[in-house]
Length: 505
Image (cartoon, rainbow, N blue to C red):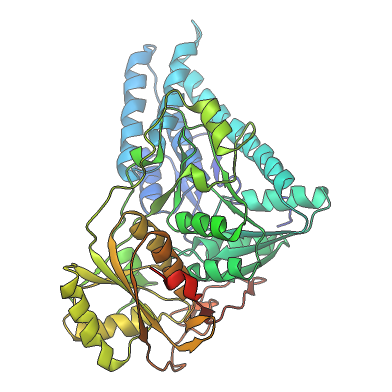
């Protein structure tokens, strides 16, 4: 593969009697396509996250084309009803993604039907051509993104934008701009490691990998001078919905003066991001990795949260990069907003969790349990704490041995739980104290900054001495299994100093 293309840029291909979907779960081990001749096969691919992002768009449109192509009647009404049902089927499978908006585009095909010709063939052709139009528009959007980047461009990205960063790299090269990427690994499906880092390295683009919890460290060091992310949904008021972990990156980018760009589409009727239901996926997807349990032993007191997406308010976005133009949040509202939308994004909550970050010494776990009771919280919230998985494989085990209700999350889910008011208190276990502030493991700066930004109290405790017995020394492995594709650099991460200013009430 050259820097001119990525198989993820157009991951679904029409084949006449059906279509094929790139199985993104198999990447980078192999490039394999799922053959689709029935809608049920397409729905399964979306449900099981074998296709996502732009792959879902093409999968829906080609499913509509498949249904239409198989329709033999002359009356458009039954076909229109069948395609409305198809839209609902896709919405049921993944409720956050804008399948209803795509269904609206398909419904518009029926308003322009010619007086003669096969209804099914005409609608099928229009659905396929609409997919081709979006593919061309994505290329133009990538070129637009390249124009706003500095030279050199050191881009931090999260999750995967279906080949579009490879296209941005190509246009930057044409403009004479240096371009490199720092990619988050993006737990729990590791789309950043498996897809983004892989496709960039294969295309000859300089790319390095970090754990999700290192985003604050990277920006604090000045190692990124731009952020580019995708958007599964964009709202008329400039809000975006994207892979969970996007919101905290946007908040920190604002704090560190790093421009934050979102690749967006037409919001259609969506007025604000808070109108979108956020999909919570099954806990087992977080609690297992390649068939192995993340936490040894079954325990009814262990739960997990997996909100798939989060909401980034428009106020934290520098520019929204659309298919047709570049927008500030204000100009995006002027372009699309039919009326003034509700500016409230987050509902106040009494909080469910006491968040624990760092590794407590043995004699402090009793205090953690007492803090849970004192705060009238439901559970101790424990992030995985990559790359060594201190949270998942040390802290969680110790809590469960003490019969403590424990909820495990991936590090990139912290931001959305703070934003929703679900965290009552942060218990921060540091490794050392220096003049500038306490030193904690990777991710400490992220956790404390989020607590500071959301008005959540932080209590400081001396942490346990840490040994190096973990199977994972850096982000190149997960539970000892290699996850970094060939050609991808491992971005160095280290313990973090948390400035005293962030710990003031």
